[in-house]
Length: 85
Figure 1 (cartoon, rainbow, N blue to C red):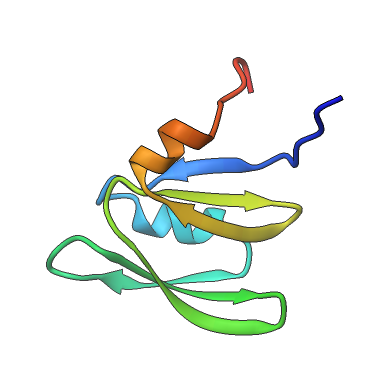
Figure 2 (tube, rainbow, N blue to C red):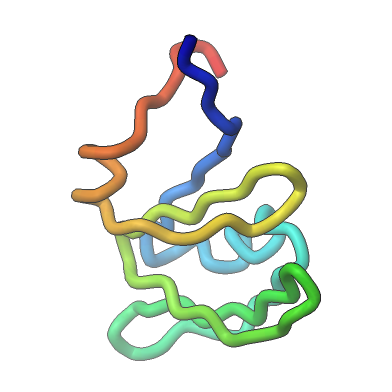
């Protein structure tokens, strides 16, 4: 039997930084650099840190927490989106 953790994902497209910050639990929008990289403050598992998300990367959340970011290539290779979810 295969068991997997449920993750939800949202891709940063270079224009939806504030939406990503609202969507990720414990995250506040900081800004977007000239090169399009998104900066957000993350309060997760008792630690606070600044996170940089390049355009086209995917943000992951699960179990009410920020779970990480992955490149578009890694996302395509390692994650499967369930139809209708």
